[in-house]
Image (cartoon, rainbow, N blue to C red; front, side, top):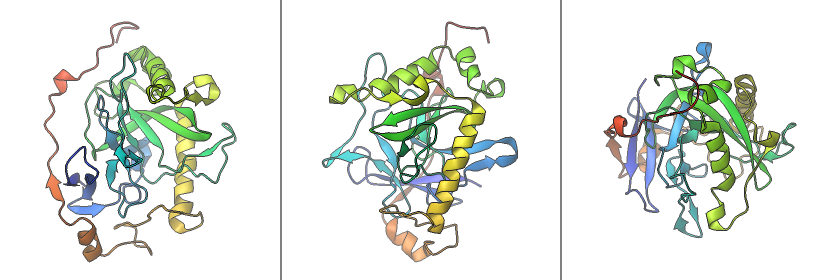
Length: 288
């Protein structure tokens, strides 16, 4: 199985779209990609929306047919995150686990807040820079619970299975051991990133504590069950598009319909990135 991308329009424009292909056929990154890459070993798929150290607020479009990735807007203008010192853009590869959904109709027992109506977010902390539309295979290490305008907005902490540290990192405490300061920086980033836009500081459940792997896996399980209710019609979809090309259900599109939606898009090769320029160096802390 091979995932590739095709794009429509140019980056930093309202028309820009990134579609994802599986073996050359366009699919929905929300509904068609399985959440597990290797269920037996607990390896998940993650769709990269925002590469590390970039600012454009790219996200899977819930409302558009086949859910392409596009840049979020507010009042007709493209959205970018600011650079709250000392951070620049997003400080991880940021994206989502497919076939998950944070149900806005359900109140979480621990956070006492409803879901934010999105696939569950992932902060992938490995050293390699990703690209928008990339499908990474990741190990889950933990989770934080951001409370954003009264909604639960889970932030799964994970690492690319191909990262040099992946074999050593198995739970949340390993993040501080091998990447000292990153948990604090993650907490700080989410708390302050909206302040430059004259919004209040965000809050966390659990006093900002990052919960462990077992807790994170359970949260992902709950959001996967919510997605199953969504795609089956048990939960109200609202404006969410359930269109897909792989599930063989009432929302599965024909090839002709798929071609119409993606007309004018162009297949892309993965960008060439000199990863040596982007490697993290954690100077303090325990020896690795």
